[in-house]
Amino acid sequence: MFSISYRRSFKMRIGTASSSLWLRCFYIFPCQAALATSMVRRSLTIPTRPSASRSDHGKCWCSASPSVVVVADDKSYGDKQVISMTPALYKYILSNVREPLILRQLREETASMRGSQMQVSPDQAQLLAMLVQILGAKRCIEVGVYTGYSSLAIALVLPESGYLVACERDAKSLDMAKRYYELAGVAYKVDAIHGLASDTLKSLIQNGESCSFDFAFVDAEKKMNQEYFELLLELVRIGGVIVIDNVLWHGKVADPMVNDTKTISIRNFNQRLMEDDRVSISMVPIGDGMTICRKR
Ligand SMILES: C[S@@+](CC[C@H](N)C(=O)[O-])C[C@H]1O[C@@H](n2cnc3c(N)ncnc32)[C@H](O)[C@@H]1O
Image 1 (cartoon, helix red, strand yellow):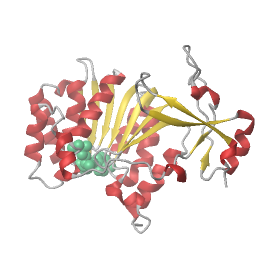
Image 2 (image 1 turned 90 degrees about the horizontal axis):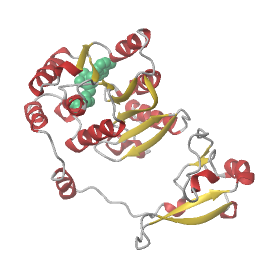
Image 3 (image 1 turned 180 degrees about the vertical axis):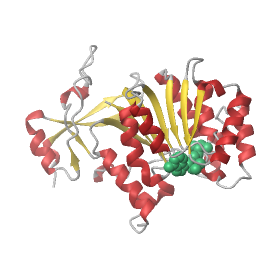
Image 4 (image 1 turned 120 degrees about the vertical axis):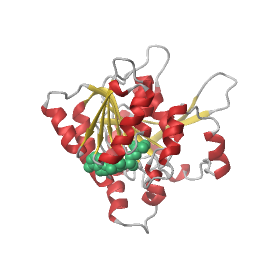
């Protein structure tokens, strides 16, 4: 077992002096790091690139142990209070989402269609749009368009010179998506490609478009996530972002009694991402769970 004596614990205060929010951080002495790493349960050694260096103003705790990370599921943290989502709370969240009218219309038209539950939720779409804006993304890819809700949310916030490659294998749903791109006046930014997404991604690479995209969203066949991820990692630039949907799979990933092939493949994918030093990651419990990956 990993002994607490290997770690020096200190608190980092967030915000102003009056703030009561504290984060407990663990500082692993560099000389003990290798030993500690070998002893921590489910420890990971994921080298962070040197660019994540010391801040100019004041001391930066992350510079103390740049190359050692551990899995955050230590027992002492197990009783952390987290908010449980209730229908009332989710209704409240939705009441704080600004949904463009055209997206609302698309959602309402899709509601009676087969597969409408596959659509991302308005709060997810808003987060995707926010990420695209924060990144200042111009070139984006979506894998799995369905009737276009998430891709339209992305296209709406792209600049005039923006470009979105939207991959979908189902012609009928892609036609509806295209109709909405037209209605929204963003069709000129979207290259809607009918076919298998992996073929489209491979042809982008063959066309010399590696490292030229800023943002990608993956929401298609879950068993293909690893393949999409590898292709997209080739296509996005350093600092670019890949978001993967359904990483919590209705909570089944955390239930050891559920072992169907889809759940296992999502679990394995999540585990591989956790160990992948090519990206920084953040798993976000929104919708059915999304992991945001930033290419290092
Ligand atoms: C979950 S839905 C996408 C929902 C969409 N992101 C939205 O918010 O409305 C998944 C879509 O991926 C498509 N799909 C599944 N496998 C695919 C593949 N190999 N290539 C292209 N599209 C695929 C399905 O036809 C389906 O429309």
